[in-house]
Image (tube, rainbow, N blue to C red; front, side):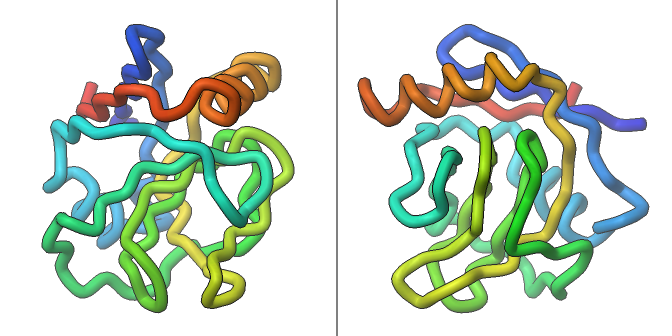
Length: 138
């Protein structure tokens, strides 16, 4: 199984790619890598963080393995059907949405992080602001 590294301010997490469940989305994500950006707290979705990739020219990606209610650590790629393109990193109870309403993102990977690690990550982005992030294939 192919994996990604999420290096967030020097703390490295590993994620398993879901190549069989979301093949076109995983391929599009791989084409972005390595991605250097900022991880921010969400505004609308609950206990989650996100990376804005609206500046990236993504190919047309179908809905595949999509969900509105991701579990903690489920990495979603949202190709911008009704809102900004983004990568969502749920850290707790999450309903993926925006001012446009509920959004369904393509579930592309599963982050190997504990409940406590994700809770701390979400809280730090809420209290202290954006964190540097590098996403790369492992």
